[in-house]
Image 1 (tube, rainbow, N blue to C red):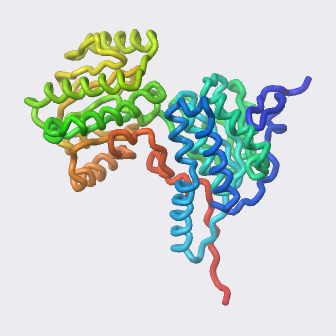
Image 2 (cartoon, helix red, strand yellow):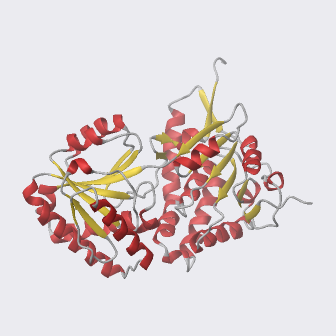
Amino acid sequence: MSDTRVRMLAPQGAPGSAEAALPSAASDTRPFSAPRQQTLALLSRRILRDDFLRQDPASVALGYWLRSANVKRLCATFEARAAGESDTVFVPVGRVFHVAPGNVDTVFVYSWALAFLCGNQNVVRVSTEQGAVLERLLAVISVAMGENEVLASGNRFVTYAHDREVSKAFSLWATHRVLWGGDETIDELRTVPLSPNASERAFGSKFSYCAIALPTFVTASQEVVEALAAGFFNDLFWFDQMACSSPHVIVWVGSAEQMHLATDRFHAALEKEIERRGYRGDASSALHRLNYAFDLACDTDIEADPYQHEFLGVRLRDGERWRKEICGAGLFAHLRLDSLAELAERAEEGDQTVTHFGFERAALREFAAAAGARGVDRIVPIGEALAFEPTWDGYDLVADFTRRVSFRGGS
C-alpha cells in the first residue's frame, strides 16, 4: 500500500510520503540574491491584490512586509554585517524544516521568507486545521510557484496529522529545524531526532502585556487616545488575542488617583474603535471571557463591567494577585504599579513583548535592561505587538538561517 500521509499544499499535489515531498535542489542559493528578493516582491503583489486576503488585516501586513522596499532594507542590514566581517563568507544553513503554529495563520510565512532569502531549501508543515485565510495564502503561493522557478524548486508546504515517523523523516533531512507552538508541542517535537550536525530553534509559549504611563495618558489629547485605541485594537483582536505577542494585561504606571479615570477613558476609546471598524466577535468568545472573569473573581478582588462589547477589561484591586494566564477572546486585566522598575521586578522567563505608551526613551532603555535580564524579549509601541522582526524572542533569525565560513591567508 502506498504511503499517503503527507498532503502537498504548495505546490499542490497528490498525497504521498515524506520522502516524496522533499524539495529538489534549490536554485541560486546565494543569501539575499536578487532573484530571491524579486520572488518575495512577487508574493507581496499577489497577496495585496487578492480580493479575499485584502479583507484580512494580518495578511495585508504580511503583504507589506514582503514588499521590495522592506526586503531591500533587510538586505542592506545583511550586507552591512557581511562587510564588517571581511574574513567570513556567509552561506545558507542548507535545509530548513519549519513547524508552524496552529493559532497564527501568517507567522509561518515570515519564518519561511527569511529562510528563503538566506538561500535555503524549505519544508513547512502547517496545521491540518486550516482556516480560510491560511488556505487562501497557500493557494496564492502555489499559483506563484507555477510561474517562478526559484520559488518552486526548493520549497514545499505540506500538512499531515501528528505522525512521529513523518516528522522524523523531515527532521533528519534538515540541517536546521524551527519549531513554533505551545510548550507541550515543543517538548514533544524535541524528542524527534535531528541529524547530528543540525541545529534547532524553538519558539514556545509566551506571555505579553502592555505598560502605559498614567500622567501622560490622562493629559493626552482625544486624538492621541483614539490613535492609541486603534493600535491596541490591532494588538488585541488579530488572531483572537492568541499570538504570543498579544497583550493580556495593561499595567498603568502612576498614582492610584488617576487609575479609574484612565481606564474609563481607555475603555470608551476602545469601544469607539470597535464600532468604527464594525468588529463583531462570536458568541463563544463572549461566553469564554465571562466564564474566565467569574473564575478569576473566585480568588481575586476584581471589578468588571460584563456589558462591555467585544472585550472585557478587568480591574485588579490587588496587584499581587496578577495571574500570568491567557484567556484570549478580548479579555485583559488592568493593574497599577508605581514605577517601571516595579514592573521589571515582575518580569520572568516566558515573558515576551511589552507594548508601551507615554515613557521617556531613557526610562524604556533602563526598563529593557532590567526586564530583559529576567526574560522580556521585545519592548515596542502600542500597535506594533504583532509586527514581525528578524530578531524574534531575542534570537537573530538571519543568523540562524545562515552559516559563517571563515577563511585566513592568501595574497
